[in-house]
Length: 402
Image (cartoon, rainbow, N blue to C red):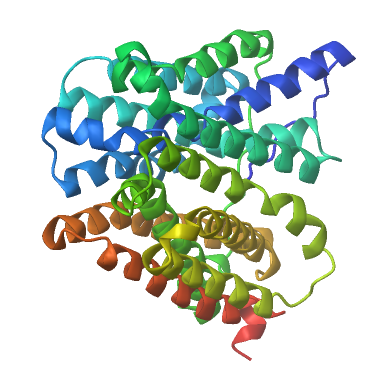
């Protein structure tokens, strides 16, 4: 949910450029510190003797933090100001990265949770900052920061395994190298600390927005987002292991994992102008879900073309995410109803996303095969396609029951 803020503008071109750089550096920290774990997950499992479920829980922790902390971010910003709260988010991310240097599985989990808290705060507040300072360029800035987020996380995933092997650096120092992005963000963002902008209070929800849980259309949109997140985080967590088990090298697996994340960011460049022209997105949503299912089956049965399947899966996953977020605005009757639907979709979506990696890890531990987890992705993708058929209709919640 985007918070409304006071409309203040940068005083000069230099301060404006510094603000843009600061926003992009924050965006660069919103995925890489925890998605970069996957390429070295085998090393972590062997180092600490973790089970599949425990390994999946490493990726799940930030998602749990998102669900718990996201609703509190606006309160923090009202007390401390947007700029100071975003600075605190970067400090938390850096603290979490530093905590993982301690050679303890407990500290690995604690550090990852702290990273999740910092990311959750920045996730909620960064769109507010963009709406305030770039009111006429929201789509452009949103695309830029989503693309930066994908490129940074993808690039880090591609590099983290080779780094772990370089001169015996090891997985802890390789993961810790993400701190360079965080430190850069902290240094640049210090220029914004002279401001102390507080988000406006959110109006109370209307009676119509309190009942979104009763609408089938609301559930279709929520499950589109939730099941897509379920699939995405299974792939983010386990793709390198799936690829190495089908004959790819660990370096290739890391590169493909990075390509997946970059591919999730690319649909924003295509869909933002397209959505303005399409009133009904049912066919597009259905097609993306079906292509995701085909890609997951391709990884399982035709692994020689894993790079193509990975790119297609990443693109479709990112596109479904953008469509689902767009539906929150397009399918609601007023801003309060949209806020309520956003809360519903985040609650269910983060829950499903948190369950996915642990469930996939447990199935693999039990069966010693990735067939079950990948079929889980296929089922989730097909259900996404069906939910997209309903959620993509050109209607709103009230009209959908008439």
